Amino acid sequence: MTAVKITPTKLKGIVQVPPSKSLAHRAIICASLAKGVSRIDNIEYSKDIQATIKAMKSLGTKIEEFENYLIIDGTTTFTKQNSEIDCEESGSTLRFMIPISIVEENKVHFVGRGNLGKRPLDTFYEIFERQNIGYMYKKDVLDLYVIGKLKPDHYIIPGNISSQFITGLLFALPLLKGDSIIEITSTLESKGYIDLTLQMLSQYGIKIINNDYKSFVVMGNQEYQAHDYRVEADFSQAAFYLVAGAIGNDVVLTDLNLNSLQGDKATLSILEAMGAKINVVSDGIKVTGENLSATQVDASQCPDVIPVVSVALALAQGKSEVINAKRLRIKECDRIIATSSQLNELGGSVVELSDSMTIRGVSEFVGGNCSSFADHRIAMMLAIATTRCNQSVIIDNMECVEKSYPSFWEDYQSLGGIIDVINMEE
Image (tube, rainbow, N blue to C red; front, side):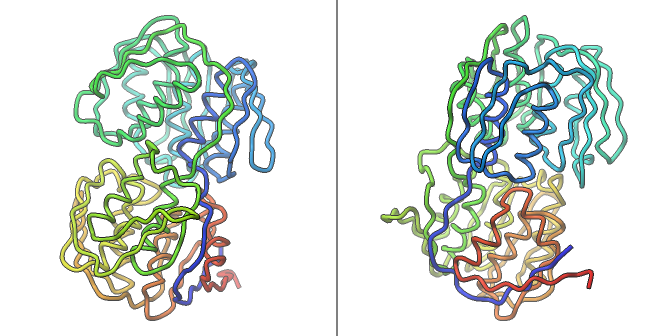
C-alpha cells in the first residue's frame, strides 16, 4: 500500500472527464442481454467496470476488450450454469447482477471485497422468500449463494433504499415470460439513476411504463436489440474538478453533456446556489467561484458527490447543512464519518449527525495526515481540498482511486498538482 504526499498548489489546465461509470455498467449489461453484436465506446477499465464485464462473461456473454472500447455478443448469454460472480467492491455490479443471473434457472455464487458484504440486500431476500428462490449468505462478508429462477410478479419496493435494486429488476423482468409491476411505496431517492436505466433500456429496445416513479410496468417477453453506444463523460468524477474551480482553481472540463440525465449533474446547481459561476468556454465547461455562500444540500438524489461538495461547503461563508445523507453510511466506507473527520483533520469545522452534517465555513484549510478510508471518493476529495491548504497533506491508500477513476493522479499532476508517492511498507 502506498500513500501520497501532496504539496498545495493551484490546479490549472484542461482535463478530459472520464466516461460515466453508471452509464458504462448499464450499456455493458444491455448489450450483453441483446442477441447480437454491439460496440461500446469510451470505456475506462476501472475496477467496478471490470467487475461487471467479468460478471456478464460468467453468464456466457462474449466480450472482447480493446484499449477504450468493447465488442459484446450477447447471443450466448445465460448458457453458463453454476456461475461464480466476483463483484469486487462494486455495489452496482452486485445489485444489478442478482436478478439478471436468475432470469434462467441457475445456481450462482456471489463474492466480493471490502465493505460490499455489509451493504444490505434485504430487498432481494424478501423477494427470494416470496418466490421460493433458495439463498444462503454470511453476515458482513459477501458470500451469497442463490439458486432458482426469477418469476413475473408484483414487486413492492421502498423508495428510500438504493435505486440499484430497482435497476436490477428493470434489467431482468423484460426477459421473463409474464408481465410485472414494480410498485414504489415511498418517495423515490436517486431518481437520476433510474432515469439513466430507463434511457439505456430504451436505447436497446426495451419499453418500460413509468407511472411518475410510483410504479413501473414491465411487459414480459421483450427482446433486447443490439446497439452501438458511446459512454458520455461522468458527472460523478467531473464533480471533483467542478468543485476545484469553485474554490479557486482554473480547470476546464471537456466532453460533459449539459443535457445529461445523470443525477450527479446536480453538482452544478449546488455550486451555483453557493454563488459559483458556470461558464461554457471554447474547450468545455469552467467553474469559477469567489466568496462562496453557505447553502443546504439534499444528499438523497446525489449521494456520491457529497464528499467533494462538502469541501466547497467547508470553505463557504456561513453555516451549511447536508441533509438526507443516511445512505452515505453504507457506501465503500461510512462517508459521513470519513468526510466530517477528514475535513476536520484539515482544519475544517464539520459536525456529524445521524443522517446529516452541519458545516461552518473556514477561510482556508491547514493540512495534515489524512485517511482515505480505502474509499476512492474520499481520497479524491482530499486531493481537491489540498489546493486550499497552507501545508502539505498525506493521504494513505492512494490506489483506492482505481475503483472508479484509475487515471486520477495522472490527471491531477497534468493540471500542476505536486505529488510524491510514499511506500508505506519501507
